[in-house]
Image (cartoon, rainbow, N blue to C red):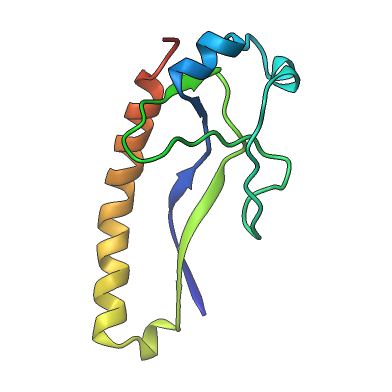
Length: 116
C-alpha cells in the first residue's frame, strides 16, 4: 500500500447563535465545562471532543476562534504505483489536486468566522 499525503485539517467549535444568547459565550476552553456538548464517537476522532452541529440551513457561529482541536493528516492510501488501475490513478490525482484547494478554502472560512 502507498500513502499520499493530501494535507491536514482540524475541527473547530460552532454553535447556533440562539445557544450563545441563552448560555453565554465561553471565553476559554476551560469554560466549555459549563456548556452542553454533543460528542462524536468514531475510530478517527477522540471521544472527548466537543462538536456542535446544527441541522441543515441553521446558522452557526464559531466559538473560541483562536482555538481548534489537534490537527490530523489526510491521506489517500492506494496499492503500489506499479499496479494502480486507471480509475484509481485518476481519483488519486484528482484528490492530490483538489484537496489542498478545498482545505485552503475551509481554512479561510474558519479563520474569518469570529464572535457573533
